[in-house]
Image 1 (tube, rainbow, N blue to C red):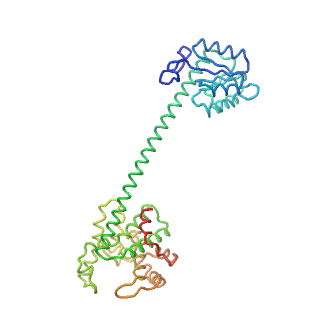
Image 2: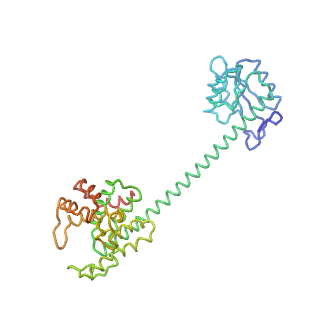
Image 3: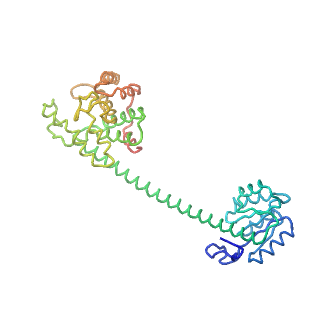
Length: 371
């Protein structure tokens, strides 16, 4: 901080010319005032240049650097506040002290708003002026330091953000590859068609969106739909691929696929919410489902959404024991089972969806990537 007794030369780290004295631009329309201020300040070690008006001051500022501009406010032609605005916007490294012969508080307030570091009333005392200029330069230096630190901090934040984005992209790519690998493994094991997986995933997504589900819950529903039968990898071929009806014991073993799938997925952090849907996708709203006999809202909402989508696709698809039925027939069956097998709130949303929900083959993958 400057005081009348301090050397006006800035520290080398903050100087534009090493240890050279501070350069001052004095702007005043009265020649005697310019000369007096220049002589007094030079006697204190400052280097001074003078200008008679705002236009001349602008030319000086364009031509060379000044540490401080000392300007009168009331001058013929352009006002000193106009110069203050220029310095604030175009020469932020230059401190500014304004002077006026008036005592109006309004002028002082306007001066500070315009970017002045200080405001003095004429006639100014040289020691008061030197102290004011010193404080102004120090304030300007501190402001530049803060701005530099803020820029450095922003650069660091930007760099870390880029690194994080890259890491997240890599994680997402790994997740997508894991999902694709699991889906491929199931199709080879169970001969489940890609089209079925895409249809149930897409319809689950559409129902969930219509329910207002978004964010991580929507992602869990999509992943859960995509991997709903992953546990069938652990079912013996003799049961999984049996062409005819299953015996009660075989049916009991087949039902364990939901628990096998849950155990496979629950230890994978990004699939843990989806694992809950895989575990509960055969639960019924009235408690008659399996494996836990959950009832109503005890069943994860994603599993309640998927149950409708899976049943619809089962009805409109060909099966070895029957031909596919129409979407309208599927709709009637879903409505008939509302409140028993299905959540009535999910059914209400489903029946208002368009009948056509078939999509291009790659849509399920794109949905996974978008989430």
